[in-house]
Image (tube, rainbow, N blue to C red; front, side, top):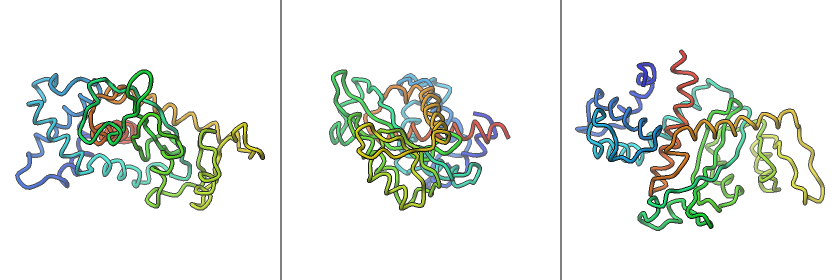
Amino acid sequence: MEDAEWAFFEPFLMAVRGQGGRPASNHRLVLDGIFWIARTGAAWRDLPEEFGKWSSVYRQFRRWTLLGLWELVLDALNDSGAVPDSVQMIDSTVIRAHHLAAGGKRGTQRQGFGRSKGGFTSKIHLITNAHGLPVRAEVTGGEVSDFKGFDALVDDDLPTARVFLADRGYDSDHIRSTIALRGGTPVIPAKANRKEPIPHDTVTYALRNRIERCFAKLKCSRRLATRYDKTSASYLGFIHIAAARLWTNQFVNRA
């Protein structure tokens, strides 16, 4: 990573460092190793020796993940005011899981796996801002409906948007009323079976392609494009890492 990007991440790593933790110089090397895994999708055991012992880097990744570090970073980026949050959009994408990813503790369903004819799948539910930068993400089984994904993402902590975009898969009275109660205007095409179709602003709706492009950028991190992680926490951690780096690539590294 570049010096500017390290300067951004370093305060967060120091904030969650426990007693007797690694010195900051090693933190940068470990973080580079985690970024390498996220980008290449390689197994932890294949981590090049230049990043240190793979087991040490993995343990630090898990420690930071369980401490909520990656979510903290993403929330800080969204709270920075660099991009107005007056427009938000939601969508989801189904991810194939590697057959070795299954079999984690607590069972596959609790770890965000769903069964299909082709094997295990997971679904990434995502909210982005008007620039197509991630605001919040969640992982569920691949068969989970977008309605449940909406409820998992939209809560009192989510910044209020004046306009909320979604495709017709989110067309329900519940979702529309939730957006309205939060002070927003839903821009959602009506389903064909809705008895009284609700018109939507087609010009504003055209912005929704930005969340689709965001998914395409996230999947450049091969650790996301195919799920290799047994636990939903680890997989969501990699999603948050890739999401945060979309922000830093646009605002930090170009500064």
